[in-house]
Image 1: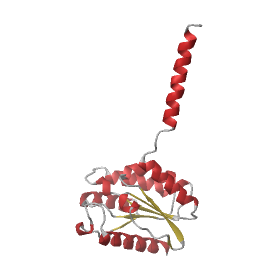
Image 2 (image 1 turned 30 degrees about the vertical axis):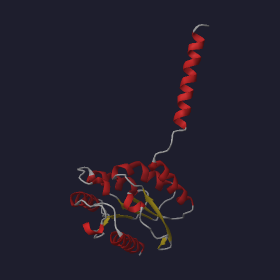
Image 3 (image 1 turned 90 degrees about the vertical axis):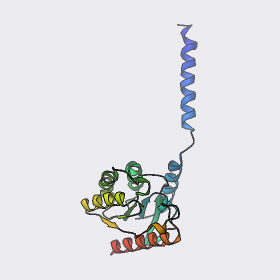
Image 4 (image 1 turned 90 degrees about the horizontal axis):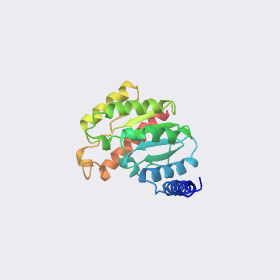
Length: 194
């Protein structure tokens, strides 16, 4: 027993050290961005939450619409399926007045975009009575899959009318594309407020 004690103690110390290293690992960018979104939500009552990818994150969203604070919950680089856990977690602490989904730019060519959209819409249905989806993907096939998923869920799918010339690198918006995105977003939210 005495000879085994130092070995057992060494293993226990190694496990404790590995646990400490894991506990202090650096946060990934999506984790950092999510913490920023939670900080914004702490200040908000009955918010309008706009879930999206880099197109949303980079947009200068209005601070308020229809008397409600607008929370930019865009996280660059993420796909629709990445929001399966993120969106419910973000929206569970504060019941949103309106949820807006502006995803799909990172889902170009995905055969699963429709199924991923349907699953996300089901997960958000109990979080808000008002859900709007905006078209932001540059890929017509992905856009069609997402449109059909929204129609199947009886959720409004707003065409932002963003053209190829409204994108600076084939994905991200230039000034003209940003204006179209923000105009479509504001119009869709104001229509839902009525």
